[in-house]
Length: 273
Image (cartoon, rainbow, N blue to C red):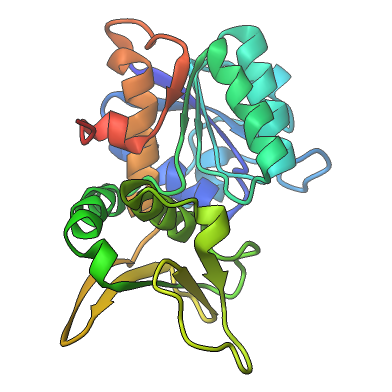
């Protein structure tokens, strides 16, 4: 039996990509398309809005009007918190690709993982999550002898910086090296900054055009450097991963939901030791 997936933020670019990824899966079906209250899309055919042809599913503006096995949420921090609380109260797993949470918001969000399976990731692409593992290896081998810089680029519409993926890359490296990212991160440089401190991890942000998402981590030592790069050319890379995570949380509709808890995409892909 197909897993019934609801998508919030359906009117956005990622919402449409998620609809396409669900349509490509033979294990999932789109059961609810949700937009913000007052949106002009309420009542429109979800298939038409997503560019997939009419499917007879009307877009709604609240979770109360939706029937689903699992929710996928790529919206904004405040909306995601409300949606996660709803899922926790109704025993529904949730996949979260929203970024930009502050510490208090993230703590409140993860409290819901004690009630339902919750998969939270800064990036759902297979390639980026493989890069996390490569970064762990590079940090162990090179980290104490190299300066580390993270450079990311995204489209002009992205509202948070650095990207959640860039921060996750920094967190992976800092944890591997036993550093506290909050203390060693440097976000951009300007003026007379002085010599670079070895333990710092630098972040540089580029915004413009229609860049889907580029990330490069540089390990710069004397005489050589190693660069680990991921470039996304389509939002479908993230959307397919999110659908894969939704199916994983529900046991592909065969074995029941995973145990309540906080998971990420590396759990889904079996990349954790």
